Image 1: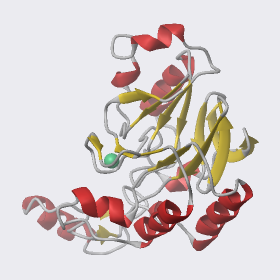
Image 2: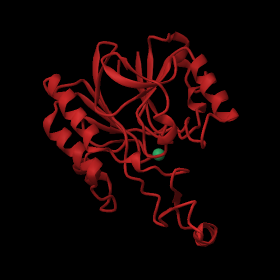
Image 3: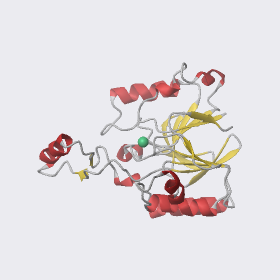
Image 4: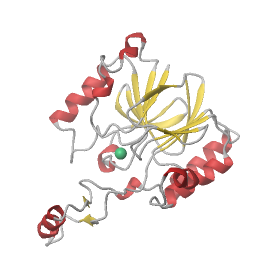
Length: 251
Ligand SMILES: [Fe+2]
C-alpha cells in the first residue's frame, strides 16, 4: 500500500491508530508519503528530546514513513543524516523506516514509479528574514511581533535551501530522461506555476521552483501529481491534487 498526505509540521496525530486505522493491515513494506513540511526535524542543532520521542514513535508505527522536504524543514540538520541509495533514488535515513526522499529522484515503490522534488518559496515572510547576528535583531523582532507581521530567522526558522539549486533541477531532468519522461506519480511540495495560477487568486506568484515544476508538467507524462504547501485539499485538475490533512491511498 501507498498512502499520501500533506504537510504535518511536526504534528503526527494523524498517524495514531484512531485517526489512521488502516495501519492495522500495514507492514514496513507499506508506505505513507508526506508532501513536504514534515517538521519532524526542526529544532536547532540536534534532535531534541521531544523530536527524538516523536521520531522513535513514528519508527515504531507498522508502516514506512517517507517525506519530501518543504520550506518548513531544518535543512542544516536534514542534510546531516546519512545519505544512501534506496529503491532507485537517493534518500536521507532519519530512522531505518523514516526516509527523506531527495529532490530530483525517481523511486520505484510498490511497483510504482515516483518522481520527488521537495522545496518551495516561503510565503509567510512579509516581515523579512532576520539574522541572529544583527545587533538590532531583538528590536526588529519585537517590532514585527507587535505589528503581527510574519517573519523568519535565518538558520532558525528559514533556510535558503528551501529553493532548489540548479544541480538539483538538473538531477531531476536527467533522472526523468532516464525513465523516458514518464512516471506514475509526482510528489512535490509546491506545484507548477500554471497549476498555482488556477487556485492562487492572483496572490501566488511564480518563482524558480514553480517555474521548474511548470517545465516538468509540460515535459513529463504522469498519472497523478500530489503536492502540499498551500494547506488545503483541492482537486486542482483531474491529475493534480493539493493535499493537506487527508490521506489518499494510491496503491
Ligand atoms: Fe506548510
